[in-house]
Length: 283
Image (cartoon, rainbow, N blue to C red):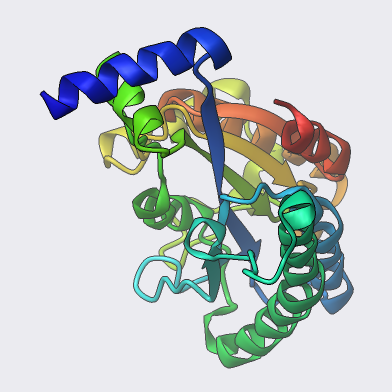
């Protein structure tokens, strides 16, 4: 009887106010930790996170940072993470009229002061701590390890669940995962089986064959519904005169990789800050 009453009450509320579903974002940030990445590039990656991702995070979003390096598979590590949905920025001393504004101000201060500094310091410190892992850029295994961090959950499975959430004063929400990769995207693994430094000499069919090899090895993770943004894509020093072709072939590989994974590639390039910002501000 109580359940029916709650549903009836919620139906009335829905008629008056409508039913909204909150979109929460789960950011997985992968940072290239190979020794071939200069310090100034690492600092550019950090600055992009600070200036683009953090200021545009919602009050229920979460973020996890992991490295891409030679230890991506056997020593994957969440070097920094937080979940805003588990934090309360309200204060019982706030007046009723300004409680929401005060809460948002504390959230913004937390992101742009506390997280801003902690994240930068942690990336630099952990990079030094993991310097023995910096010989290779194992992006393929980093993405396979990141699969465990993907969050596409929601707190309802039916219209009835939504009604009950509303009646009980709970927001209806679902999560969308976005993987942001800061790397030149030139994969190198210890076994040299997927060494993209020679990609400048390959034809399209050779690149396609590499993707097929990964499929056969079950190394393309299921990333259906996941948004992907790549920042920093360029050529490697070894490419030489083949740099332009290497960039094209590496991009082709990752386009096919993410298509096979079921992911939505929202941006790929050397500087995709604009694409990242457009994704963040989109409703």
